[in-house]
Length: 196
Image (cartoon, rainbow, N blue to C red; front, side):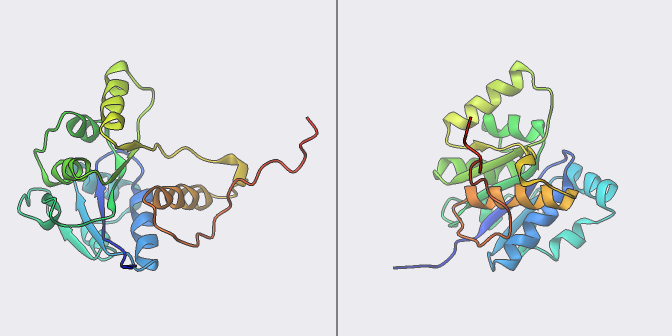
């Protein structure tokens, strides 16, 4: 039996929530999971604004990284095996492009390839409120096998910091990829008092 862990593609688009991308890359690196990074131009701007980091800083956390226009990259082909792809955070524009098969850059192409190869595509969608246009795009991605997973805080873990919330959400994203990791995060175990 082959226990080799397949690489994970990490896409980052321009929505708020750069901290999720940073923490995801850090966590996958600590798990010795090979990562392939592609970020949009808007993601670079958001990363700089929210965290004071550059794309160069982010690339140091990834195993391999590609420019957004590199359509000849390994992750642009279905013959390159991966465990799947997480787009964290995922902007509505990126989700809409994926929902309609518009592979106009490496980020959307890699997502399209992930879907067509029937691999896990997880979009950490960052938008609220949602219009019917957004909901229809989410429906299309879900019907194609993708997973829409907004970063919704789990208050049952009784977080005491933003880091607690981010770490829990990132652990859930890694769970969705099917990567067995001993996360040091709290999980729901049911209510202790079930007298109701």
